[in-house]
Length: 299
Image (tube, rainbow, N blue to C red; front, side, top):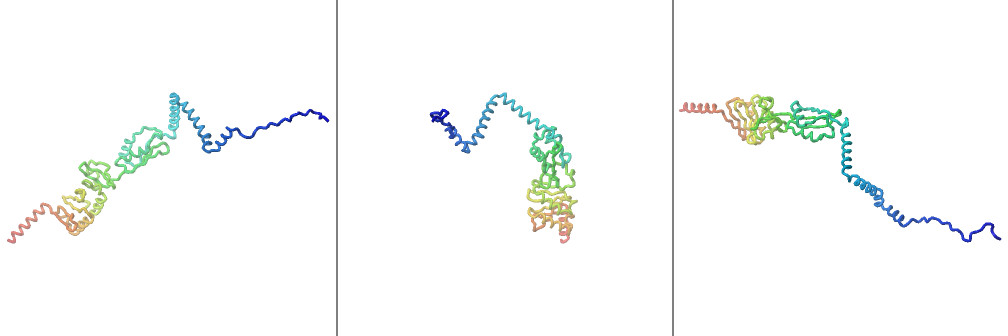
């Protein structure tokens, strides 16, 4: 019996695609499993391509100059925006004279962009002024360069061979004076190195408070010890060690016997265990006359 339709003598094979990757695809997939290669393909390759394109673009000098000018214009436009502009400078905590000195050492031409101001450099310039103990600099809201100053406060006058100056509690000389009478309210110290021992000098001045109206000042002798100089040419010569205790003994003697109201040229306390009194020249002459008269009477 014959079939109605003609059957092919050979069966057609159904051709299917081979699922196995090619050799190169297999190798590439294996490499992509490596973290280093995967990062190199995702990051390194785009970066390298961008770098090569950038180098090729900026190889032309005209393009480089044009790009730099564009960057400068963008930067200037940003820095010169109104919210970044500083229009004036304010100095607080300083006297009129010190404020003028500050404006002289910070010569700024306003308005300026805040990006053009070196606040640390400005602070250093202000702090270098002798009369300035501390300075802070900031940009205040409203475009104001704010400088806050703490001035040195004088507690004594220091006389040297070069002149007289004000000194603060740290012994820093910060302002010259034309004369001693410019500040009669302050005590006077004199001599080389006197300012380095200012705390001790101030303690001596407090101890000698009963002699305040007669005191002319303190003199540093040989950079080792103090002399208290009084009117009428009198001196209290203090030792190198424990000068306050020695002065207290002198004050006790003066309170008990009015020692410094007599014809005494100096009270020498350099030897702490022995008080030496030196009389005035007139007193010495009178003493010798008295002795001569006594000797004649005895004869």
